[in-house]
Length: 112
Picture 1 (cartoon, rainbow, N blue to C red):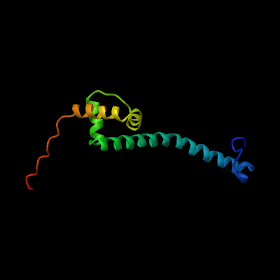
Picture 2: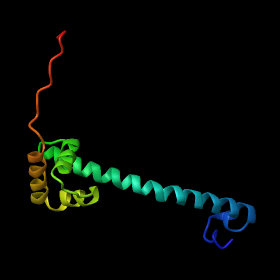
Picture 3: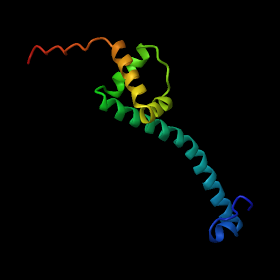
Picture 4: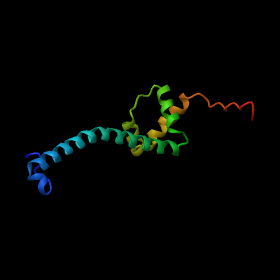
């Protein structure tokens, strides 16, 4: 009953309703803590992708270039740099582009 303090109507007064409400709330809290991690990672990727598109590179090529340049920054830090310090992010993009091999044209199929 202590956990149900402040719940609406019978959910804070009747034993069965309170117990069910508390169990459901604890279940949603558990799921929400896991979901929060997914949501933030998704947000960081969207921010990085938007900054990359402004500078003429795709998100996947940028991340591949960073990995090949041995720059180990997580997505949270990259997102902060992309939103708060644009010149530093442009420098990272240049390093990533330099680490990537020159783009090769796709070979044409024999039938076309």
